[in-house]
Length: 123
Image (cartoon, rainbow, N blue to C red; front, side, top):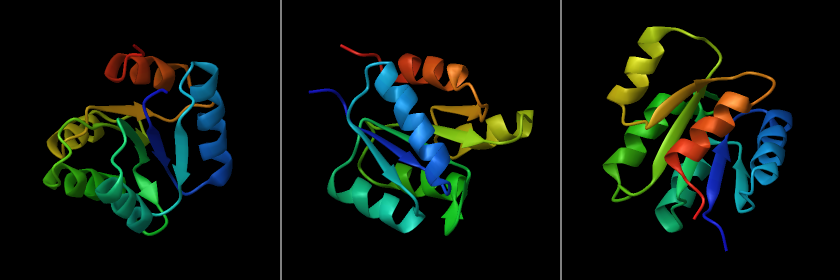
């Protein structure tokens, strides 16, 4: 059984596309979540190996969610933030709140998949 990955965002269509790509790359335990509240509850009860979190969520902010996660006892969990803007201050802000990496959203997901493989190697 593979490692579990949570994908968090506000667009069901985008989340489904990311899940398809993850499965294509061999990550088959993928759960999609649409809200910050549900994300934090899920991580408290059953932390994944990796959370991919959009910086824009309908009921929260991905940076704030990341900061809250890092206050929990889930140090083993990796976090990748997804952002629509390629700005260096976003990368620094992501690192400041405890993210392992920040990826700019693109339609081909190649950079995201490369980053996933870097932070969560398949073994």
